[in-house]
Amino acid sequence: MKKSIQRIGSRRNGRIDSRKNGRRIPKGVIHVQASFNNTIVTVTDVRGRVVSWASAGTSGFKGTRRGTPYAAQAAAINAIHTVIDQGMQRAEVMIKGPGLGRDAALRAIRRSGILLSFVRDVTPMPHNGCRPPKKRRV
Image (cartoon, rainbow, N blue to C red; front, side, top):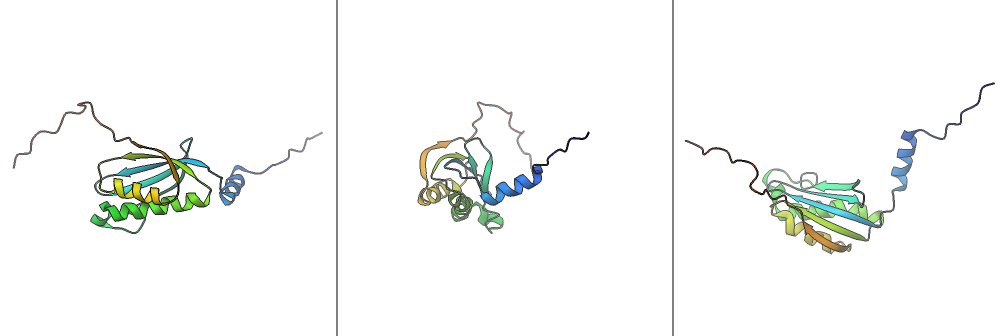
């Protein structure tokens, strides 16, 4: 006598299904990485799973224009736009890096209507870590 095993649905089907519904995310974390050449804005849920992201490069800026504050603002708007549709109301902001897009991205996030619980600077600072390269001789 053979027992019939019910197939409830494959992992792949479940994943497509959850994508269509779009998880409701009331609270999240917005990470802004601002280098001199580009600005990357990543939106995660509280556990750290990426929900949405955008960069100055994906927002249509090329070359040296990617490092500008306007490009950072555009990247922040693009990243947040999809998350607002999923129901995010509150967020924490982590800003990393020395780039020009830091303030512009933060201003765009403020204007989006999401309530910010705090803004934290998480730029890595060496406690005199690596030895610098030897001086150039020309």
